[in-house]
Image (cartoon, rainbow, N blue to C red):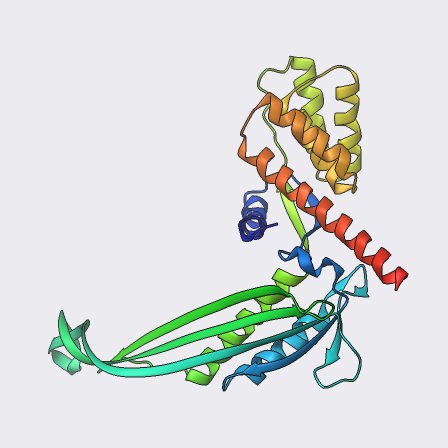
Length: 315
């Protein structure tokens, strides 16, 4: 799965909050998005060592914390080995961090009081040019992983971050400390690497389709009853929609909602077949496309996990 799909999952998380806010009917879906670096499916142990630059050691510690904390089905995903350990790891992660801080004088327009009245109360404001100081922080981390068995590089990524803040005469604020800004950039870099190398669990509320356009009155009323049932008994709502399909009803909303039900109970094969049906009934519908991608990603992550466990048992 690429970074686009990770962003899409993040978008679904945001949309789920919006859906809840407007009290839409939803089904809760739990799953995993696969690691973005498939080479790491077979990597069980990692040594973190050889980070250069003034902040390299700090990034190494951040990475060790993030990767050590990853758990899938309550099992550690990686064995993190100390860089100087005599135990051979499957891969070694190294890199370099460069962070530069530059300050320079500048001029900017600010809204300032130019006339005061009684009790020193401002009565006229204008945008005027004032002297300012700008601070620019340029951060770049490079992270690479080398597989021990053949010495081949299996991961290389660059993580640039920039921060710029301008403080002008009369402003009621100070610069954030450059150390805290760089710490945030280090943390964001470690999180990005973690998401590249390992699967990520999610729990989201996905809005069901409620349109009954094209249904008969009897079909529509039964379908609507299923919608209402999602508030108190999602399993019963799913059973009702399955019953409607068994009685020969065909509709985009019915196919999509049944697909969500299958995905919710972990039957990804049935979910994908139903999403295909929904897509054939309404090609290119955004909700169907997003859910199909999510289910495919979950299936990939699950297959990779099973392969990983098989490899661990064979060692």
